[in-house]
Image 1 (tube, rainbow, N blue to C red):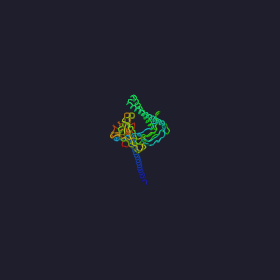
Image 2 (cartoon, rainbow, N blue to C red):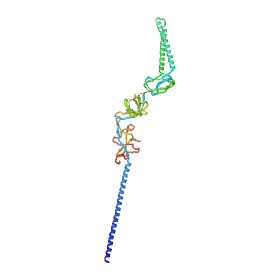
Image 3 (tube, rainbow, N blue to C red):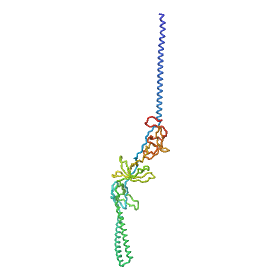
Amino acid sequence: MTVEQPQQEEIKPQAASKAGWGTAAAVIAMLLLLVGGGAVLVYYGIHSRTVSANTLAAETRVDAVMAVSVIHPKMGGADEEVVLPGNTQAFTDSPIYARTAGYLKKWYVDIGTHVQAGQLLAEIEAPELDHQLQQAKADLATSQANLKLAQTTADRWVFLLKTQSVSRQETDEKTGDLNAKKAMVDASENAVHRLEDLQSYEKVTAPFDGVITARNTDVGALIDAGANSPARELFHLAATKQLRVFVNVPENFDRAAQSGAHATLQLAEFPGRTFSGTLVRNANAIDTASRTLLVEVDVENPTGELLPGSYVSVHLKMPGGANHGFTIPANTILFRSEGLRVGVVRDGHAQLVPITVGRDYGNELEIVSGLTLRDQLIVNPADSLVSGEPVRIAGAEGTSK
């Protein structure tokens, strides 16, 4: 019994030693696993931050390049149209004055009345003129009586001269008196005719067909024919069956102002409607103050719906083949001290290209030289734009370098 106890005591320390080594190995393995996992996490974290930083830098570089919208020039049409303002006027427009002095007895028309040529508009009461006419007629009767007596006397003296009963001198005197009496009759007749004409002006009539646009008198008003003071307008008459439209055409569009050319008119009070007119004449001279050519367009107005004095837009066609250049929008132009420029995108950079402008169409300009149809024009370029500046076309993929 005493011999076996030491053997058991030797076996127990060996088993304990093996168990300790196993525990240590497990601990070390766990430590290694933890260290390796942390390293992996650190690696992936650094890589993710690096990728994000690179992406941000790339996006920043893209955003730093100016984005622009572009368009291409277009060929100018052979039937370019110019739109100009104009004012309508009555084809015939006239004030009506009195030719006889007196008082207005009665008026028969008012504003807006359509009248015919020769229609009675008003009557003037002129008693002094009537009395003058009566006196002139009496003077004419006296002159005619004296002429009759002188004619009889002259005939008698001519007959007596044949028998040598009277002298030739006395006969010539009687004949001269006859001629004087004839002249007095002629003068009296002319005086009567003059006063009769003045009396006829007591009735104021329309000189042509039209519409009364103003009445500036009333019953009892003193009518002065202008002998002592400027005459006063009684009525204003306008012929509106046909209207005149006067337009000032800029000098660079004067080829559209050819007599006989067709014109189209538009008025704000008739939306969606157009009226046809004909360019009947032009001034054949440029106004040096406005640099325009005055032209007249006649428009038929049988219904009278177009009113004199209305504002109209007149559309004139340019003659075919008048425009051979390019046209570009006005919002692509840059005004620089060295002249007009446009921004063109070439190889990812903006280039300021000088241009030569032809005609100005308002929202568009004719370009005579400096551009091609393939050029990409920058729309609404910034005033700070300089040649060589990197740009990118809005909506296009990729960046400009």
